[in-house]
Image (cartoon, rainbow, N blue to C red; front, side, top):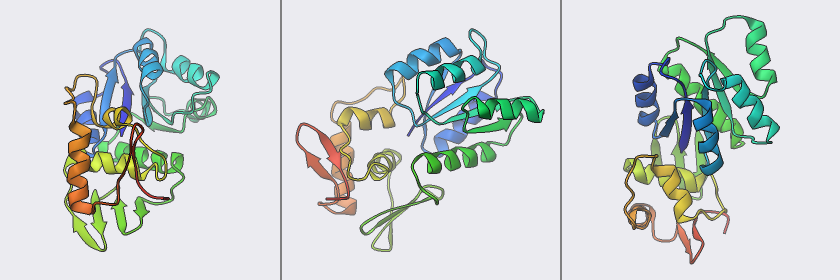
Length: 219
């Protein structure tokens, strides 16, 4: 899953990005809100982490622009104000949650998970499909009750497919969930990951729709 982090170096970015990477998120970072607007026009993200203190168009203005454009991307605002009125104002403007700085990376991850569960209509960290159960908090996958070890990229592909059960995902869409701005993508990367997943989870779970992409579930 791909996240856009908007900040201007005020956050301990390396620690934040490392924590998100450990959770298998792909993180694109924009240093200002104008860059973020351009990224949001061209790339589909599951979550926006927005530092209100960014220069060159404020974070609050970016949030207002998003909701005015009817963009429903979940937004977690990162701010410094302890005032209740300020937090309420941000939430009323369309943010999904507010986290005050400084914060513990573990709390950031928990807030991200909670927002994504709500946006995907889930009440827990478990995603099920036939004989599979994925635990997005523990990063475990079981098939018929037996744990299956997946690589980071295999996990990301399955997460994308399982959160869109019954909806075909194109190769380019899956690539977006795996690779950030500066990553090099091999032309057959998705095919290789899908092939490996079929070996581990069974040959019929992931179906290929020629000219469209891949799909699991609801057949």
